Image (cartoon, rainbow, N blue to C red; front, top):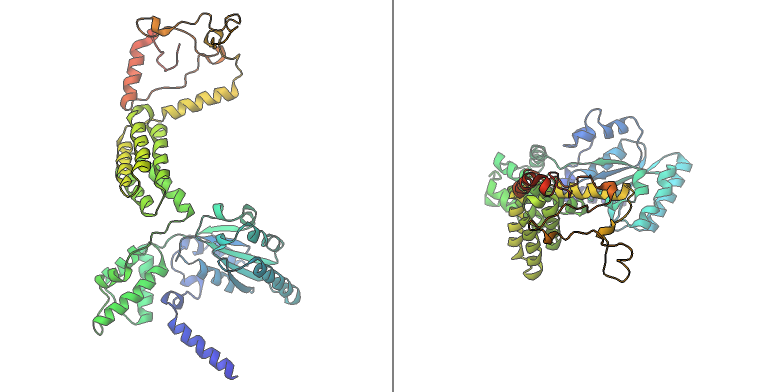
Length: 440
């Protein structure tokens, strides 16, 4: 009896000392702020819970978006027993013990088990495989939480047996709603501007915002009694924000960077470049992406773009960071402001399709190599016309197998230097390369 009293007293003291984010955890799905696309009336996750048809699922989202809270609430809305493990510290032995206990519980009492596995992406392949039989047979329901893209970090077999729900960062107004609850809990008041500063700087991470609110409240209290939390308190409490950058961010931010270059939005391209550099991305990876974009998205509309991108890549190797960031920025500005054309890409794709799909008779005899004994006897090189023998530097001649001789692959666009090239070919007419760009 005495031990129970001491334990209860200890729990109360721990609850009072717990971080504000833990003290404010919602007690029902209706109290959850944000994630309306999953938890609103008639939305998928709520519908599964209310219908009592919960199956294994994976909650994917940035830190502080409610993954743990939602997992606990989902488990609490069922008659299942909840077991929690963290993939950071759990082992295969722990998983097997949970599975064995779940089998006993189901057999003896008919009660299912929900295993909440936080940071599921930290489990290696063999650890994840240990869960498969129990998940597939229904011995336990798995709720996995991850901040990393599960398509990269969770076994395909385990992911196929689970429903994937993506949680989004909370909007600033949603974070402000939670912060006002926090003010009531700590018995403080705050200026609207201070709350907005905390909400905007949190990046949708409620846990980070509430932690900063506790610090801001302490700073305000140190200045005097009943003084509200001001903007300066909020800024001091926020300190230096750590940039979140996981595996999926690597691909997503790089994609946004190149798409901004392709879309000729120079400011957006510079923003994403700064994001990549601030996150510690390998500058050689950035340089490679720029070299690819120079040919894929610009091509002959501005042939200099490839040289600029290649020069930036060399500068990364020769100069290194931090100075090479300027070379990357210069290349980014050049490529983003250059005229755009993907005609080189389209031309190569079209030619590749013909190489793959069209059966040809091989290299025409007059184009075949003649640099070995016996080539002349085979007729190799016979009939070949040397273009430099003509004053124009061009002679009408077949350069492809007859089966693909009429195909046009490269069609210059009207962008940048490519427009000049197209105009020159149009003026050449039958006396030079044909208007479509292929040799006659």
